[in-house]
Image (cartoon, protein in one colour):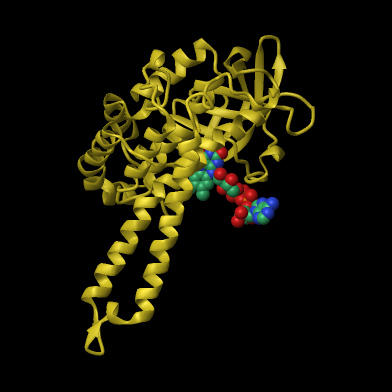
Length: 320
Ligand SMILES: Cc1cc2nc3c(=O)[nH]c(=O)nc-3n(C[C@H](O)[C@H](O)[C@H](O)COP(=O)(O)OP(=O)(O)OC[C@H]3O[C@@H](n4cnc5c(N)ncnc54)[C@H](O)[C@@H]3O)c2cc1C
Protein backbone atom coordinates (compact mmCIF):
# COMPACT_ATOMS: atom_id res chain seq x y z
CA UNK A 1 0.00 0.00 0.00
CA UNK A 2 1.45 3.35 -1.03
CA UNK A 3 0.66 6.28 1.24
CA UNK A 4 0.73 9.83 -0.13
CA UNK A 5 1.59 13.11 1.61
CA UNK A 6 -2.17 13.55 2.20
CA UNK A 7 -2.33 10.21 4.00
CA UNK A 8 0.63 11.24 6.17
CA UNK A 9 -0.96 14.63 6.94
CA UNK A 10 -4.15 12.87 8.05
CA UNK A 11 -2.10 10.39 10.10
CA UNK A 12 -0.41 13.28 11.92
CA UNK A 13 -3.73 15.04 12.56
CA UNK A 14 -5.22 11.91 14.14
CA UNK A 15 -2.08 11.12 16.13
CA UNK A 16 -1.88 14.68 17.50
CA UNK A 17 -5.54 14.42 18.49
CA UNK A 18 -4.96 11.12 20.27
CA UNK A 19 -1.94 12.50 22.13
CA UNK A 20 -3.58 15.78 23.17
CA UNK A 21 -7.27 14.99 23.56
CA UNK A 22 -7.51 11.27 24.41
CA UNK A 23 -4.39 9.87 26.08
CA UNK A 24 -4.18 12.34 28.98
CA UNK A 25 -7.73 11.27 30.02
CA UNK A 26 -7.70 7.52 29.30
CA UNK A 27 -7.19 6.31 32.88
CA UNK A 28 -9.88 8.64 34.24
CA UNK A 29 -12.41 7.71 31.52
CA UNK A 30 -11.75 3.97 31.77
CA UNK A 31 -12.21 4.21 35.55
CA UNK A 32 -15.43 6.23 35.17
CA UNK A 33 -16.84 3.80 32.57
CA UNK A 34 -17.71 6.69 30.25
CA UNK A 35 -16.22 9.67 28.44
CA UNK A 36 -17.66 13.02 27.25
CA UNK A 37 -18.57 11.59 23.87
CA UNK A 38 -20.40 14.63 22.50
CA UNK A 39 -17.46 16.95 23.35
CA UNK A 40 -14.85 14.60 21.89
CA UNK A 41 -16.91 13.95 18.75
CA UNK A 42 -17.49 17.67 18.21
CA UNK A 43 -13.71 18.21 18.23
CA UNK A 44 -13.19 15.26 15.87
CA UNK A 45 -15.96 16.63 13.64
CA UNK A 46 -14.21 20.01 13.40
CA UNK A 47 -11.09 18.20 12.11
CA UNK A 48 -13.17 16.29 9.55
CA UNK A 49 -12.20 12.92 11.04
CA UNK A 50 -15.80 11.70 11.39
CA UNK A 51 -16.50 12.06 7.67
CA UNK A 52 -13.33 11.03 5.88
CA UNK A 53 -15.03 8.74 3.37
CA UNK A 54 -18.47 10.33 3.47
CA UNK A 55 -19.94 12.36 0.57
CA UNK A 56 -18.85 15.99 0.40
CA UNK A 57 -22.42 17.22 -0.12
CA UNK A 58 -23.24 16.09 3.44
CA UNK A 59 -20.07 17.54 4.95
CA UNK A 60 -17.70 14.62 4.43
CA UNK A 61 -14.28 14.68 2.77
CA UNK A 62 -15.26 12.25 -0.02
CA UNK A 63 -11.94 10.37 0.21
CA UNK A 64 -11.44 6.66 -0.50
CA UNK A 65 -11.20 3.90 2.11
CA UNK A 66 -7.40 4.04 2.41
CA UNK A 67 -7.76 7.34 4.32
CA UNK A 68 -10.27 5.76 6.72
CA UNK A 69 -7.78 2.99 7.26
CA UNK A 70 -5.02 5.45 8.19
CA UNK A 71 -7.30 7.17 10.72
CA UNK A 72 -8.40 3.84 12.23
CA UNK A 73 -4.78 2.72 12.49
CA UNK A 74 -3.68 5.94 14.18
CA UNK A 75 -6.56 5.84 16.68
CA UNK A 76 -4.90 2.61 17.81
CA UNK A 77 -2.23 4.81 19.46
CA UNK A 78 -4.80 5.60 22.17
CA UNK A 79 -3.96 4.16 25.59
CA UNK A 80 -7.44 2.66 25.83
CA UNK A 81 -9.71 0.74 23.49
CA UNK A 82 -13.00 2.34 24.47
CA UNK A 83 -12.69 5.79 22.89
CA UNK A 84 -11.43 4.50 19.51
CA UNK A 85 -14.26 1.92 19.50
CA UNK A 86 -16.83 4.68 20.05
CA UNK A 87 -15.34 6.62 17.11
CA UNK A 88 -15.26 3.52 14.89
CA UNK A 89 -18.93 2.84 15.63
CA UNK A 90 -19.74 6.38 14.47
CA UNK A 91 -17.63 6.39 11.30
CA UNK A 92 -17.58 2.80 10.10
CA UNK A 93 -20.40 0.88 11.77
CA UNK A 94 -23.61 2.91 12.08
CA UNK A 95 -23.30 5.39 9.19
CA UNK A 96 -22.01 3.53 6.06
CA UNK A 97 -25.48 2.22 5.09
CA UNK A 98 -27.08 5.65 5.53
CA UNK A 99 -24.34 7.19 3.36
CA UNK A 100 -24.61 4.51 0.70
CA UNK A 101 -28.34 3.82 0.53
CA UNK A 102 -30.18 6.38 2.68
CA UNK A 103 -32.61 8.99 1.34
CA UNK A 104 -31.60 12.63 1.15
CA UNK A 105 -33.78 13.27 4.24
CA UNK A 106 -31.98 10.57 6.25
CA UNK A 107 -28.60 11.90 5.17
CA UNK A 108 -29.47 15.49 6.10
CA UNK A 109 -31.13 14.53 9.39
CA UNK A 110 -28.65 11.93 10.68
CA UNK A 111 -25.53 11.63 8.51
CA UNK A 112 -24.60 15.32 8.26
CA UNK A 113 -24.77 15.87 12.07
CA UNK A 114 -22.90 12.58 12.64
CA UNK A 115 -20.10 13.95 10.44
CA UNK A 116 -19.91 17.27 12.34
CA UNK A 117 -20.08 15.45 15.68
CA UNK A 118 -23.40 17.08 16.63
CA UNK A 119 -25.06 13.66 16.81
CA UNK A 120 -23.77 10.39 18.24
CA UNK A 121 -24.88 7.20 16.51
CA UNK A 122 -24.99 3.54 17.41
CA UNK A 123 -25.63 0.29 15.55
CA UNK A 124 -28.27 -2.20 16.69
CA UNK A 125 -27.78 -5.67 15.25
CA UNK A 126 -26.90 -8.15 18.06
CA UNK A 127 -29.55 -9.62 20.32
CA UNK A 128 -29.36 -11.91 23.33
CA UNK A 129 -30.00 -14.94 21.10
CA UNK A 130 -28.30 -13.73 17.90
CA UNK A 131 -24.75 -12.37 17.58
CA UNK A 132 -22.77 -14.13 14.85
CA UNK A 133 -26.06 -15.51 13.52
CA UNK A 134 -27.47 -12.17 12.35
CA UNK A 135 -30.25 -13.80 10.30
CA UNK A 136 -31.74 -15.09 13.57
CA UNK A 137 -32.47 -11.64 15.02
CA UNK A 138 -36.06 -11.29 16.30
CA UNK A 139 -36.73 -7.56 16.75
CA UNK A 140 -39.84 -6.73 14.72
CA UNK A 141 -40.98 -3.56 12.90
CA UNK A 142 -44.62 -4.11 11.96
CA UNK A 143 -46.14 -1.81 9.33
CA UNK A 144 -49.01 0.36 10.60
CA UNK A 145 -50.14 2.88 7.99
CA UNK A 146 -47.11 5.00 7.06
CA UNK A 147 -45.31 3.96 10.23
CA UNK A 148 -43.58 0.95 11.75
CA UNK A 149 -44.23 -0.19 15.29
CA UNK A 150 -41.00 -1.63 16.69
CA UNK A 151 -40.79 -4.26 19.44
CA UNK A 152 -37.81 -6.25 20.68
CA UNK A 153 -34.36 -5.65 22.17
CA UNK A 154 -30.73 -5.26 21.14
CA UNK A 155 -27.73 -6.41 23.18
CA UNK A 156 -24.17 -5.03 23.62
CA UNK A 157 -24.93 -1.70 21.92
CA UNK A 158 -21.84 0.53 22.01
CA UNK A 159 -22.48 4.30 22.49
CA UNK A 160 -26.19 3.62 23.08
CA UNK A 161 -26.68 5.32 26.47
CA UNK A 162 -25.61 8.69 24.99
CA UNK A 163 -26.57 8.11 21.35
CA UNK A 164 -28.92 10.38 19.40
CA UNK A 165 -29.87 7.72 16.85
CA UNK A 166 -29.59 4.01 16.21
CA UNK A 167 -29.23 2.25 12.87
CA UNK A 168 -31.51 -0.66 13.69
CA UNK A 169 -31.86 -4.05 12.01
CA UNK A 170 -35.46 -5.29 12.36
CA UNK A 171 -37.74 -7.84 10.75
CA UNK A 172 -40.31 -6.08 8.57
CA UNK A 173 -42.02 -9.20 7.16
CA UNK A 174 -42.43 -12.95 7.68
CA UNK A 175 -40.33 -13.77 4.60
CA UNK A 176 -37.15 -15.91 4.78
CA UNK A 177 -34.58 -14.69 7.36
CA UNK A 178 -32.31 -13.11 4.73
CA UNK A 179 -35.18 -11.32 2.99
CA UNK A 180 -37.35 -10.17 5.88
CA UNK A 181 -35.03 -7.54 7.37
CA UNK A 182 -34.74 -3.78 6.98
CA UNK A 183 -32.41 -1.14 8.39
CA UNK A 184 -34.30 1.70 10.08
CA UNK A 185 -32.83 4.86 11.59
CA UNK A 186 -34.50 5.50 14.96
CA UNK A 187 -33.96 8.65 17.09
CA UNK A 188 -33.03 7.47 20.56
CA UNK A 189 -35.37 9.90 22.30
CA UNK A 190 -38.40 8.15 20.75
CA UNK A 191 -41.11 7.12 23.24
CA UNK A 192 -40.90 3.40 24.11
CA UNK A 193 -37.08 3.10 24.17
CA UNK A 194 -35.44 2.09 27.46
CA UNK A 195 -32.04 0.76 28.56
CA UNK A 196 -30.45 -1.76 30.88
CA UNK A 197 -27.86 -0.35 33.28
CA UNK A 198 -24.41 -0.04 31.63
CA UNK A 199 -22.87 -3.45 31.02
CA UNK A 200 -19.85 -3.90 33.28
CA UNK A 201 -17.22 -4.94 30.74
CA UNK A 202 -13.73 -6.32 31.34
CA UNK A 203 -12.14 -3.94 28.84
CA UNK A 204 -12.98 -0.96 26.64
CA UNK A 205 -14.68 0.37 29.73
CA UNK A 206 -14.74 4.01 28.64
CA UNK A 207 -17.10 3.11 25.79
CA UNK A 208 -20.61 2.77 27.14
CA UNK A 209 -22.44 -0.45 26.29
CA UNK A 210 -26.03 -1.32 27.15
CA UNK A 211 -29.00 -3.45 26.20
CA UNK A 212 -31.82 -1.48 24.53
CA UNK A 213 -35.53 -2.33 24.73
CA UNK A 214 -38.11 -1.26 22.13
CA UNK A 215 -41.69 -1.27 23.36
CA UNK A 216 -44.19 -0.18 20.68
CA UNK A 217 -41.78 2.41 19.26
CA UNK A 218 -43.55 4.20 16.40
CA UNK A 219 -41.30 5.25 13.53
CA UNK A 220 -42.17 6.69 10.10
CA UNK A 221 -41.45 4.17 7.33
CA UNK A 222 -39.50 6.86 5.49
CA UNK A 223 -36.78 6.42 8.16
CA UNK A 224 -36.06 3.01 6.61
CA UNK A 225 -32.79 2.86 4.65
CA UNK A 226 -33.40 1.70 1.07
CA UNK A 227 -35.96 -0.89 0.01
CA UNK A 228 -37.89 -3.02 2.48
CA UNK A 229 -36.38 -6.52 2.88
CA UNK A 230 -32.81 -5.52 1.83
CA UNK A 231 -31.60 -4.86 5.39
CA UNK A 232 -29.64 -8.10 5.76
CA UNK A 233 -27.66 -7.39 2.57
CA UNK A 234 -27.05 -3.78 3.58
CA UNK A 235 -25.89 -4.85 7.02
CA UNK A 236 -23.51 -7.43 5.54
CA UNK A 237 -22.04 -4.63 3.40
CA UNK A 238 -21.88 -2.34 6.43
CA UNK A 239 -19.98 -5.07 8.28
CA UNK A 240 -17.22 -4.78 5.64
CA UNK A 241 -16.26 -1.36 6.95
CA UNK A 242 -16.79 -2.47 10.55
CA UNK A 243 -14.40 -5.40 10.22
CA UNK A 244 -11.81 -3.46 8.23
CA UNK A 245 -11.91 -0.71 10.84
CA UNK A 246 -11.54 -3.25 13.66
CA UNK A 247 -8.54 -4.91 12.01
CA UNK A 248 -6.80 -1.58 11.22
CA UNK A 249 -7.44 -0.19 14.68
CA UNK A 250 -5.58 -2.96 16.53
CA UNK A 251 -2.36 -2.92 14.48
CA UNK A 252 -0.70 -0.06 16.40
CA UNK A 253 -1.99 -1.16 19.79
CA UNK A 254 -0.60 -4.66 19.24
CA UNK A 255 2.72 -3.15 18.13
CA UNK A 256 2.76 -1.00 21.27
CA UNK A 257 2.16 -4.10 23.44
CA UNK A 258 5.10 -5.93 21.85
CA UNK A 259 7.35 -2.84 22.07
CA UNK A 260 6.55 -2.44 25.75
CA UNK A 261 7.25 -6.15 26.32
CA UNK A 262 10.63 -5.82 24.58
CA UNK A 263 11.45 -2.78 26.72
CA UNK A 264 10.56 -4.71 29.89
CA UNK A 265 12.50 -7.80 28.81
CA UNK A 266 15.55 -5.63 28.11
CA UNK A 267 15.45 -3.98 31.54
CA UNK A 268 14.54 -7.03 33.60
CA UNK A 269 17.62 -8.97 34.67
CA UNK A 270 17.53 -12.61 35.82
CA UNK A 271 20.47 -14.99 36.37
CA UNK A 272 22.90 -12.21 35.48
CA UNK A 273 21.44 -11.20 32.13
CA UNK A 274 18.46 -9.44 30.55
CA UNK A 275 15.39 -11.58 29.89
CA UNK A 276 15.79 -10.48 26.29
CA UNK A 277 19.11 -12.33 26.08
CA UNK A 278 17.25 -15.66 26.29
CA UNK A 279 16.85 -16.98 22.75
CA UNK A 280 13.41 -18.46 23.44
CA UNK A 281 12.10 -14.98 24.32
CA UNK A 282 13.61 -13.56 21.10
CA UNK A 283 11.80 -16.26 19.12
CA UNK A 284 8.43 -15.60 20.78
CA UNK A 285 8.66 -11.83 20.26
CA UNK A 286 9.71 -12.32 16.63
CA UNK A 287 6.71 -14.62 16.09
CA UNK A 288 4.39 -11.97 17.55
CA UNK A 289 5.91 -9.24 15.36
CA UNK A 290 5.48 -11.49 12.32
CA UNK A 291 1.80 -12.02 13.17
CA UNK A 292 1.31 -8.25 13.39
CA UNK A 293 3.01 -7.75 10.01
CA UNK A 294 0.72 -10.42 8.54
CA UNK A 295 -2.30 -8.60 9.99
CA UNK A 296 -1.05 -5.32 8.51
CA UNK A 297 -0.58 -6.90 5.06
CA UNK A 298 -3.98 -8.61 5.17
CA UNK A 299 -5.65 -5.35 6.20
CA UNK A 300 -3.94 -3.20 3.57
CA UNK A 301 -4.69 -5.61 0.73
CA UNK A 302 -8.51 -5.33 0.67
CA UNK A 303 -8.29 -1.60 1.45
CA UNK A 304 -6.13 -1.23 -1.65
CA UNK A 305 -8.76 -2.99 -3.75
CA UNK A 306 -11.64 -0.99 -2.32
CA UNK A 307 -12.01 1.68 -4.96
CA UNK A 308 -14.44 4.58 -4.78
CA UNK A 309 -16.63 2.90 -7.37
CA UNK A 310 -17.06 -0.21 -5.25
CA UNK A 311 -18.20 1.87 -2.30
CA UNK A 312 -20.61 3.97 -4.36
CA UNK A 313 -24.42 3.70 -4.04
CA UNK A 314 -24.59 2.05 -7.47
CA UNK A 315 -22.68 -1.01 -6.21
CA UNK A 316 -25.49 -3.36 -5.27
CA UNK A 317 -24.17 -6.91 -5.44
CA UNK A 318 -27.56 -8.57 -5.04
CA UNK A 319 -28.69 -7.05 -8.32
CA UNK A 320 -25.82 -8.43 -10.37
C1 LIG B 1 -17.59 -4.64 23.70
C2 LIG B 1 -18.64 -5.07 22.72
C3 LIG B 1 -19.30 -4.11 21.98
C4 LIG B 1 -20.29 -4.49 21.06
N1 LIG B 1 -20.97 -3.52 20.35
C5 LIG B 1 -21.99 -3.89 19.54
C6 LIG B 1 -22.78 -2.89 18.88
O1 LIG B 1 -22.54 -1.68 19.00
N2 LIG B 1 -23.81 -3.31 18.10
C7 LIG B 1 -24.11 -4.63 17.93
O2 LIG B 1 -25.06 -4.92 17.20
N3 LIG B 1 -23.39 -5.59 18.55
C8 LIG B 1 -22.34 -5.25 19.34
N4 LIG B 1 -21.59 -6.22 19.98
C9 LIG B 1 -21.96 -7.61 19.80
C10 LIG B 1 -20.98 -8.37 18.92
O3 LIG B 1 -21.14 -7.99 17.59
C11 LIG B 1 -21.32 -9.83 19.17
O4 LIG B 1 -20.80 -10.12 20.47
C12 LIG B 1 -20.74 -10.73 18.16
O5 LIG B 1 -21.47 -10.61 16.99
C13 LIG B 1 -20.76 -12.20 18.63
O6 LIG B 1 -22.03 -12.56 19.03
P1 LIG B 1 -22.29 -13.30 20.42
O7 LIG B 1 -21.63 -12.53 21.51
O8 LIG B 1 -23.75 -13.58 20.52
O9 LIG B 1 -21.51 -14.68 20.30
P2 LIG B 1 -22.00 -16.01 19.58
O10 LIG B 1 -22.55 -15.71 18.24
O11 LIG B 1 -22.88 -16.78 20.54
O12 LIG B 1 -20.62 -16.78 19.44
C14 LIG B 1 -19.97 -17.41 20.57
C15 LIG B 1 -18.71 -18.07 20.07
O13 LIG B 1 -19.04 -19.09 19.09
C16 LIG B 1 -18.33 -18.86 17.87
N5 LIG B 1 -19.19 -19.19 16.74
C17 LIG B 1 -20.42 -18.71 16.46
N6 LIG B 1 -20.89 -19.24 15.33
C18 LIG B 1 -19.94 -20.10 14.87
C19 LIG B 1 -19.84 -20.94 13.72
N7 LIG B 1 -20.83 -21.00 12.83
N8 LIG B 1 -18.72 -21.65 13.58
C20 LIG B 1 -17.72 -21.60 14.48
N9 LIG B 1 -17.76 -20.81 15.58
C21 LIG B 1 -18.85 -20.08 15.77
C22 LIG B 1 -18.00 -17.36 17.88
O14 LIG B 1 -16.83 -17.07 17.12
C23 LIG B 1 -17.75 -17.10 19.36
O15 LIG B 1 -16.43 -17.43 19.73
C24 LIG B 1 -20.59 -5.87 20.88
C25 LIG B 1 -19.91 -6.83 21.63
C26 LIG B 1 -18.97 -6.44 22.54
C27 LIG B 1 -18.28 -7.52 23.35
